[in-house]
Amino acid sequence: MCSDSSRADRPDYDQVIQDIADYVLKFQVDSNEAWRTSRYCLMDSLGCACLALGFPECTKLLGPLAEGTVVPNGARVPGTQFRMDPVKSAWDIGATIRWLDYNDTWLAAEWGHPSDNLGAILAVSDYLSRKKISVGEPPLKMRTVLEAMVKAYEIQGVLALANSFNRVGLDHVLLVRVASAAVTAWLKAGSREEVMAAVSLAWVDGSALRTYRHAPNTGSRKSWAAGDATSRGVRLAEMALGGEMGVPSALTAKQWGFYDVSFSKTNADQKIKAPVNRQFHFSREYGSYVIENILFKISYPAEFHSQTACEAAIILHSKIEGRFADIDKVVVTTHESAIRIISKTGHLANAADRDHCLQYIVAVGLLFGDLSAGCYENDFHQDHPEIDELRKKIEVVEDKRYSDEYLDPNKRSIASAVQVFFRNGSETEKIEVEYPLGHRRRRQEGMPLLEEKFRSNLLSRFPPHRAEKIIGLFKEQKKFEETPVNRFMDLLVI
Image (cartoon, rainbow, N blue to C red; front, side, top):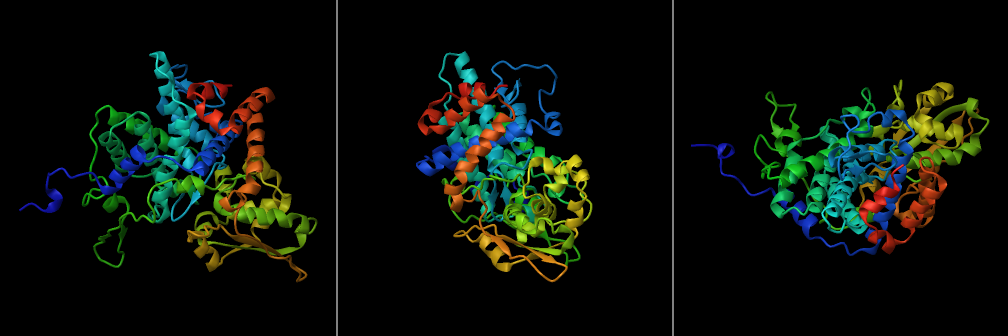
């Protein structure tokens, strides 16, 4: 008799896959806050992309794979003159948005950056709009882009709420690929079967390892991994809508499915290691929760778990200026996730290593009273050996309350505190910041600053008159939603 695992009967799609498809096809966005916040998310992400275009390590990766290729009705890449197929355009858009670690963030059991999905959303929407115009049909409007954002954010964020992929060594960009595949299939008017096929193919791809985000292998891949994931979501959705069959039990298939292969732990105490099966858990249904609670990086281009520590360090700067040589130690109190991800000592090999080092970020904040993307670059680091000297004096400790409230759905804090101790026995006050400037609880304070961040980032790429035209379009929700996608993207061509 055949075992269940060898039966050839084709199953129904896994419930997780069905739920994603039903959500993306049926959910109606009825939250004014979700519509408004999605506009801010798009605004901020495009600003981050413009700023990244000033960094050669980013721009060297952009453009068509075959130099000089121009695609009819091709999708634009904001801040450039590229017009490419939607798969490569999605790669470039995703990479530029993510490059400087300055775009919005979602923190839960898993972390990530839902705006990474904008690579797929903008590229596919632009391509479809231009293709429609070429055959006399009306283009998509920016309201559709915002709706796709709400859905992509929700898929990625709800999957992340109670499921930690990092604890089994997998990178969060897996969730970008899944969400991008789902919304791409929806944008292209896919059927329920086609959306499920696209999502299943995204799960079958497995996931990149997180090793490029952690010592000793931290490197620039973490800056383009999201672009790679969102572009792969586009490709898989295109294949599904072209008739490629899905994989119904991509998650649950015994021995060969995602749960058994990639989401299980092994029991090291057993002589023969056997998998301890795990499945996804969900703490809420899909809606518009994630985009309404998204975290913006408003002032500091730093990994989000370090934002409150950075803010506290900058507050302390003026209180200790001129006394740096007298510092005995600096104590950074924070939550468990920050310690696990970005607390590191020893040599930092490159900018990607530095922007994911809690001690480096705190040291720069204390020494200079500010933090910009340039502070991670080799030239800046080499010119300021005092940063590494101060890093050696930094102690990082966990506060269990911070760790608990980080996961508390009623708080979702990202708390840290910084205190400086001097050789003569004196000390500063302990500066505690529970909620970073980009938190939902600080929206009223943060949004004007987010707009200024956008203006500054636009001016790094566009002349003032063009920047002001783009800014003006973002100011009015209804006018923005009614703007054709192709016209919007044309505004962003350099």
